[in-house]
Length: 89
Image 1 (cartoon, helix red, strand yellow):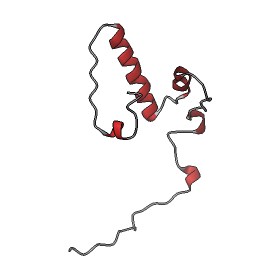
Image 2 (cartoon, one colour):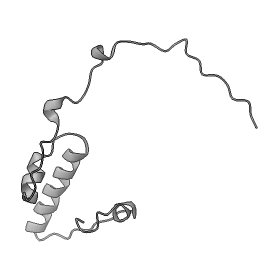
Image 3 (cartoon, one colour):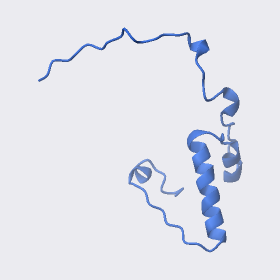
Image 4 (cartoon, one colour):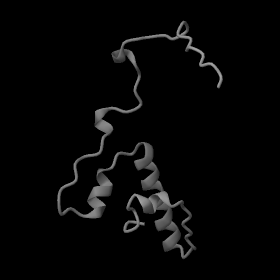
């Protein structure tokens, strides 16, 4: 087995967390869903960032394709089914 080389830390730069620029702030978070609420209300509460933004975009594109009479094909791996998304998909 090869010898493990130690990590070189001499070029690592540290700075306070407060100075770190963040791409997300608390105003961008989703708002809480209420029990018994509609799916459309849940969807409207999602933030327009990261994976939620992608989900909203794909829903819009599928809706446009469906109303235009176009064929919609879903290709995915088994992970979505494994984690229980079958009823949604």
